[in-house]
Amino acid sequence: MIETALAAAGANLLAPAILFFALGALAGWAKSDLNIPDQAAKTLALYLMFSIGFKGGVEANASGFSSDLLAAGGLGLAFSFLAPFAAYVVLRSTCRIEWVTAAATAAHYGSVSVVTFAAGSEYLRAMGVEFSGHMAAVLALMETPAILAALLIAGSNAREPGARFQPTLWREVLLNGAAVLLIGSFIVGLITGKRGMERLDGFVGGALFQGALCLFLLDMGIVAAKRLAEARTLRVATVLFAVIWPILSGIAAMFAANLAGFSLGDATLFTILVASASYIAVPAAMRIALPKADAGVYLPMSLAMTFPFNLVVGIPLYHAAVQWIVR
Amino acid sequence: MQVVDRKKLDIFIESHALERVEEMLGRAGFKGWSVFEGVEGSGAHGAWRQTGIGESGACLVVTIGGDEASEKALEWLSDYFKTYPGVVSVSDVSVMRGERF
Image (cartoon, rainbow over all chains, first blue to last red; front, top):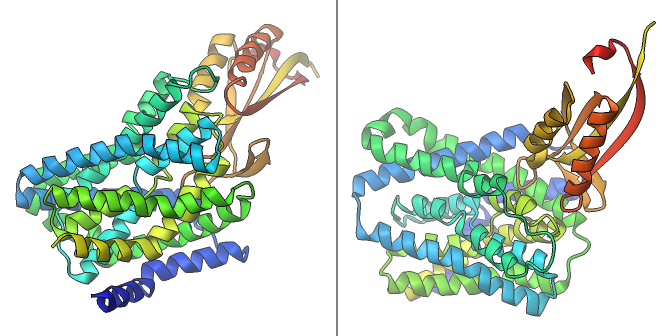
């Protein structure tokens, strides 16, 4: 079993998506002028969310509304909302980060990464492991509860200036583009089902999706390398947190998924979601909600450390561990 | 050539605040403004860069108006900058077609 897991981890390292991420990171580190225009990167991100949501909706339509969906959704909401409280306590006690930055960082680790989910899905497909379409809906549900948790943490520290609750923030939290597109595409897929997939099959799947994912990961590599080079204020403890926290929260997710009776594929994807950290929706919300929080701490942690760790090591590691737990 | 004296404000803010700042400028009495999107830079909060991932760029709002509108805008901005990052600079300018400002 260990040999199989190591072989899968080795194959993952040589997957085009991972190699393109490494290429981007190398280019960013070497200060190459390789650059994906920001509007192109935004378009790629929108395309990935569109495809993931739509495919998930179509698959949920085929399998029908089930109690599994409710269980997965409920568990996802609970993890996303509760994880920031635990992360906050650990960040404050071990990393010695000031409270407002710790609250913002905790929100990143409660929320999820769409691209880590996409890479995890592709990994499972390559391994021939089936998973439910409704996991795309779980992904969308887990985007925002962590932001609300961070606001509650910040609210409890209201003696300090900085925490602001305003209409702009609620719009950002509840109607952020990523959540709207993911849930919207999922609903369109759910309504149109197989008929819709016949029309969009060549667009949302296959080589086009793979290529877009590779191109986006190339850009992520560039951005992550640049972010890491600029992250001069990070302590060793925060770097360790960025790597150890995903493993610990992933272990909790594995056992919860097993107790809830998830399939191997669903449990792996759920673990990947819980172990991932946001770097699109949450930073935007934190700039409005907690402007005094230091983006120089939370962005390098989620984008330049946790994301590459999950992409390269985490996904095969979680899959191997889930195989061992979910029998 | 006929020119008149006016105040010019260069307001540098994060993009999430743009809507509120534009609304404020209208209320303060400015008749128009232009918005420019920032690419990258560095300041008290460290380096920032407009990327498609995780970071939205900062904006520069340039507006020209009378003393009264300028005072009202600066008052609002001084309160805003207590919480959020940003910069405003004020300069005396001479403009043609003064009735437009």
